[in-house]
Amino acid sequence: MINNSLMDKCRPAVARHWLLLMAGVLWSAVGVMLCEMASYWFSSLDWPVSGIGAAMGFGAGAIIYRYGFSRIAERNIRRILQKPERMCFFAFQAWRSYILIAVMILLGYALRHSHLPGFLLAFIYLAMGTGLALGSSLYYERVFREMRS
Picture 1 (tube, rainbow, N blue to C red):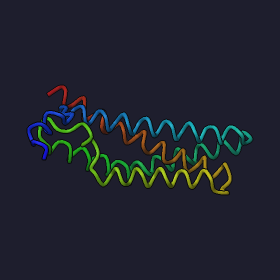
Picture 2: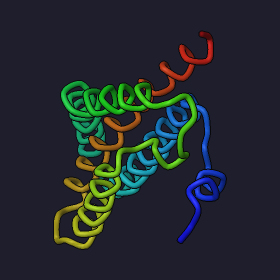
Picture 3: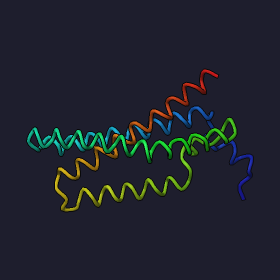
Picture 4: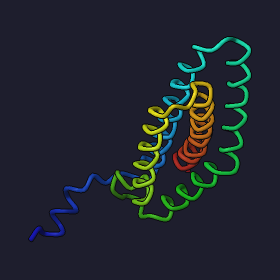
């Protein structure tokens, strides 16, 4: 049987603002990665098609941010702020979110290996990447507010 005080000493505890920052960095990194992958698919298309697709992808990403990811980020920010001042580093996402991340990775793998045309893949990836990148700004805004107070 492991002593609870020993477990507490081994837990990587950090201040809440680090959890907010880590969540923002993760959302930014994944968003940029998805946008970069979309740019690869768009680069193989002719200019008018890729330009229209990129504009549509960014527009869809703004909608995804406004009606989806902003709400998820705000809920996660509230969850983190309700926790004690110091908590486990891996608590920057709720445990259910780790399951969602795994499902999203598997879905991305399935999309990349499907027979969908590059234009559609690029649109989906750009929309999701834009939504995530915009959503990360909510975490950064809160980090700066927390550090000022």
